[in-house]
Length: 349
Image (cartoon, rainbow, N blue to C red; front, side, top):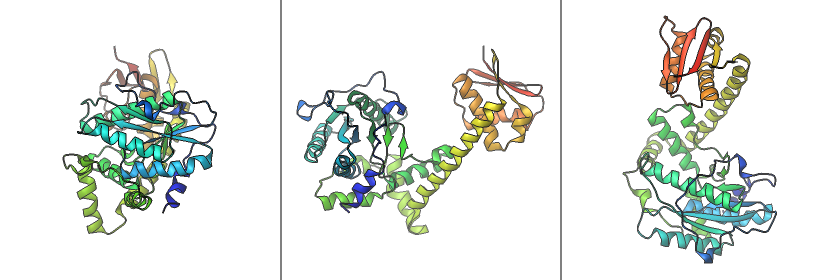
């Protein structure tokens, strides 16, 4: 196992030409504190070798990833460091961060950055902590010139994400789960079970931190992890998590293909004017619903940078599929109306 896990990490090491330019933008503000001087900053890196950062919490998943990266990075000609985000939500969180930093140094990783953040309240505690964490990761990557940030999400995390998307009924996009590579971020362990990372840490003599919040049932994801998935495995048999992860991959492939075809069609059909953009009704009606709705969302986003919900998209589509002479559909900042043979999208006054 000590060899198998590093080989997984090797798959998503960035190539020498990779840059962070395609990743999420650096936030304009991030409430963070400087790292301890003993851990270094990495701001004055004098080398042409690419640098990757592991997002390290000290838990078994990220600690296993850090160890695998420390093993693999020199063989790939890549420098590897870590960034540790202290959310400040639990007593002793600074001590947990310092302990993780010490482990990273012992693994030979550098730079080792600690970033303390202030977690807001928008979207609930989980969403707010995630937003603060990714803002800090973006900023650390920008400061150090890192070409990638490696995240320790596992197959179990993927299965949980798909189940949560199903429960919320939030559409195919939410069922894609997480991508192995998305802009700045890489998830080398997305095909690995959590039990494997725990066993790896044990066999490697790595003392992983067990986050007490991971057993608090007030969090929806914890309930999915500790109750829903085990019940599904018990009642349906083993392999549910793997099946959910496979489903996410298949849905992502299909959705990416549909998005590609929709964009190709939209570029041929769309007519731009000073007032906005229009699409021919007959062409919209001739396309399957999945493409028609993507064309509608494409027009609104491309022209007005407004993202439509499914309900809003279907309401616009009724101007094509259920035309009874109805009036315009007013959306946030956008008006859509059927004028003759065209569906016209214009800015609302």
